[in-house]
Image (cartoon, rainbow over all chains, first blue to last red; front, side, top):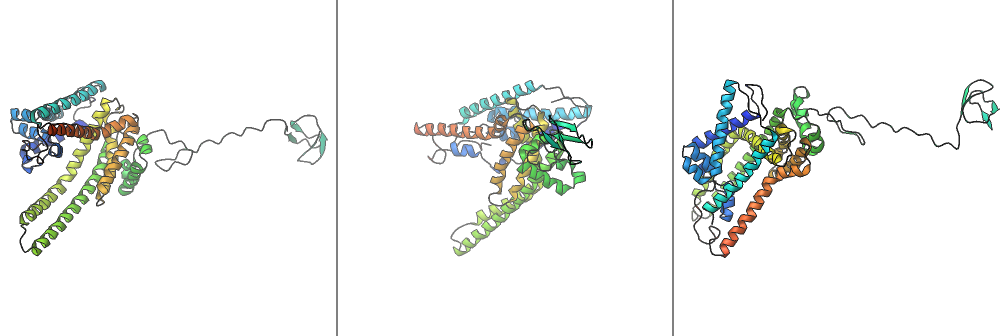
Amino acid sequence: MAARGPRTFGHAEVYAAVFALSFAVARFAPWLALGQGCPFRALTGVPCATCGMTRAFVRLAHGEVAAAFGVSPLGALLAAAAWLFAVAAGIRLALGLSWPEVTPAAARRLALLGGVALLANWAFLVVAEGP
Amino acid sequence: MRARCFSCQETFETDRFGTQKCPSCGAEVYLPDPAAPPPVVAAPPPPAPPPGWGPVPPGAVPPPTEQPAPFAERAHRGFLASYLETWKLAALDPIRFFRQVRVDDTRSAVLFGAIALTIGNWVALVVSYLSASATMSFVAQITRRMHGRVDTLPLLQAMGGLTLKSLVAQLVATPVMVVVGLYLTAGLFHLLLLVVRGAGRGFPATLTVVGYASGIMLLRALPVCGGLVAVVWFIVAAVHGLSEAQRCGSGKAAFAVLGPVALACLCACLAGLVAGVAGVTGLGGLPGLDGGTPPQGTGI
C-alpha cells in the first residue's frame, strides 16, 4: 500500500468501511438466527476451511473472545485485524497521517502467510469438529 | 539498339539503358534494362490505428498507448452510449480492451460493475419472488383439492414471510452489497496474484478488471440460465482481463480466478474421501444418512 497524501479516501478506506460494516452487521444483525448452514459440511460432515468465520465475527463483536477463538481462531484473528484496520483508517483520516509503505515482497509474504493460516485453521476445525 | 522518344516519336540509336536525352527534342527518355531485377516496390505502410475504441482493420497494429474506457468518458460520450460500448468491449473483446484500458480510473470501473450487478440482482430477485408466488398459489390449489388433508399452511406462511421480507431487504441492500462484493472479489484475486508474483501493475489494475468484467453480470437478469451463463462468461473475461491488464500471462491469471474454485473442489474431494473412509471404518458417516447425530453448530 503506497503512502498517499493525507485525508484521501482511496481503496484502503473503502476496505475500512467494509470492515466497519462487517462489525455493525455482526454486532446488531440477527445473523446466526437465520440458521444458514454450510452446504459443504452438510454434505460431507466435515467442516470447510472457512467454517466458523461468521460465528467468530459475531462472537467477537459481542465481546466473547474465547468463544470466538473456539469456533474459528483464524476468523477471530481476521475479525480483530479487520476492525483494527478500520479504526486505524479512521485515525489516519482524522489526523491526516500517511499509510506505511508495504513493498510487493512483503505483501506477497503476507498473502502466503494467510494461505498457510487458512490451512492450519482448517486442520484445527477438522480435528476439533470433524467426524 | 534503337529507341523511340515518347515525346517527339523520333527514333534514335543508343547503346545503353537508363535515363538519357532524346537527340531530336532533348526530352528525357527512360529505357528499362530487360536483364535488371524487377524494381522493389515498397510495402505499403500498415493502416494507421483507429482513434478511440473503433474496430481495428485487418493488418492494422492496435494502438500501443493506453486509453480511458468509453465509460470513463461518459460525460461527453453520453451515459447509455458509453455504457453499451464499454459493455461490448469488455464482454466481446476482453483481450484488446483490458490490454489498452487505463487502470487509474477505478471509480468508473466500480460504478460500471455495480450498475450491472445491481440491475441483474434486482431482476433476478423479482423473478425469484414471482416464482415463489406462483409456487405458493400452486400449493394452495393442491391444499384445496386435498380438502385439507395435507397441512401446507406452515409452508405457505414460511414462503410468504421469507419471500416478501427478503425481497424488500435484498432490494434495498443490493447496491451496497455489490460494491462490497466487487472489492472483496478484487482483493481475493489480487492476493492470489501476489502469491504468484503476477500483480505487477498493482491493485488498481485488478479492480479495473473486476469492475468492467462484472458488467457481464447484467445477464443475471435473464431468467433460468442467465446466472450460470453470466458466471462462466465472467470467469473467462476475468482471466483474459487479468492476464492483459497485469501483463502476467494467462496461467497466473487463471490461478487467481480459478484458484478459489479449484481449492473448494479439492477440499470437497478430500473431505469426501475422509468422510468415506470414516464411514467404512465405522468411525462415523454422513450425517442424516446413518441416523447419527449431526455435528454441532451451524457451520457458518
